[in-house]
Length: 220
Image 1 (tube, rainbow, N blue to C red):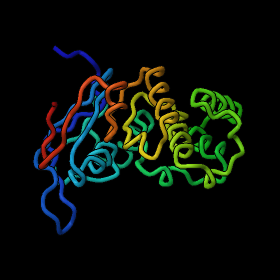
Image 2 (image 1 turned 90 degrees about the vertical axis):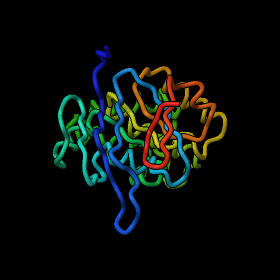
Image 3 (image 1 turned 180 degrees about the vertical axis):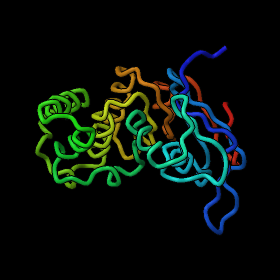
Image 4 (image 1 turned 90 degrees about the horizontal axis):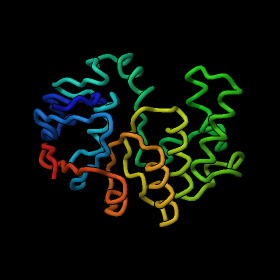
């Protein structure tokens, strides 16, 4: 019997974009505390869409989404849930919108009501664990692709989430940045589901792999 806490449970999820054929048909999936899951599938199979459904950015046509033992239906439900589950977007530019690195990392904790002193400590600690000391006043827009990915991850980790949804966390990163991301995740010992085409990333961070294809998700 699995006694671990359920982070996200999808039951009977169906979804289609307007005017398009069905993408998911009564899909089921469960993500539990302690899981480190890799998610693979062909382009267009709906991996990113599935993440957005999990976190409440897209509403399914039918089915239930349960997180931390509570069925999530309203925007308030999902807003509460997002305090505990961090989503790393595939494109770092979708996550970074402040002028400097410090402002980007501080944005989330400030919105959570943290004091300026607390936020300063969070920013310093997050920069340190990601190897970004000295980046405090760098202009985010001018960073390289790998640097942006690290700062994007920093903005998520600064929220102190209990779990992560990582959409292509190493895409556009060189070997050194990829190694750093792998080391950070392994040091944090945090539950996550990661979408990736990077076999090295999966080999070094995940426990099990699921494939999403033709509207179904199965462990492989």
